[in-house]
Image (cartoon, rainbow, N blue to C red; front, side, top):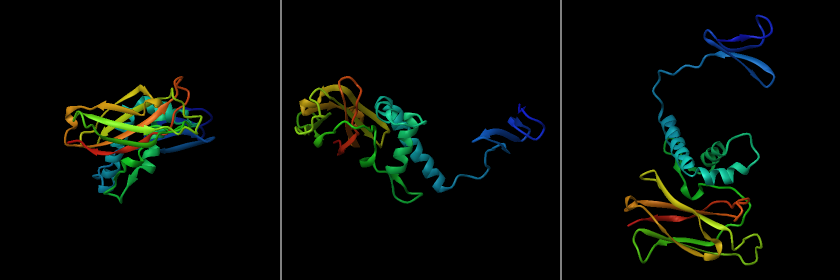
Length: 215
């Protein structure tokens, strides 16, 4: 039901028949009620929907990291909206309808805390269902504290599944063995880290540690 606020031709808000009235930037706007198209989606539209869905599912899974990083940005949008928008604009490669996600550019967090130096990830030499992360600390950067926690995030594009751990080891450890699910065997894995201060007030940008083929 639409509401009439100032005469028969002014300030209509809500649905009136096949029209919708709303107030936008100080102006009263009346448009035709949107309706579903009977046309089948194009290849470009399908590609767009697929990428949007994949990015959104990753962002939803890592809600804590997304909130800590993107949620600190000065914006009227939610952290989730900012993360999806950021990655859709910067982590997509190729030409439609064959665009795909460039996982090396995917970001889970944005922040001012220093990241890892010489970050690497390899298949563990001791156990096939572990990944070995290593990194170094910039001793000349006073903002890189030994008590900062490192977070590990692993995404498997083929299955759409994720695994990882948050705040389990400090920056000073310089290495960590991360257990992964058996279902990841034979699949490519995209691996990331980021740092959080002990009090949780600062975070770093997320970093892509590498792409592994899990044997």
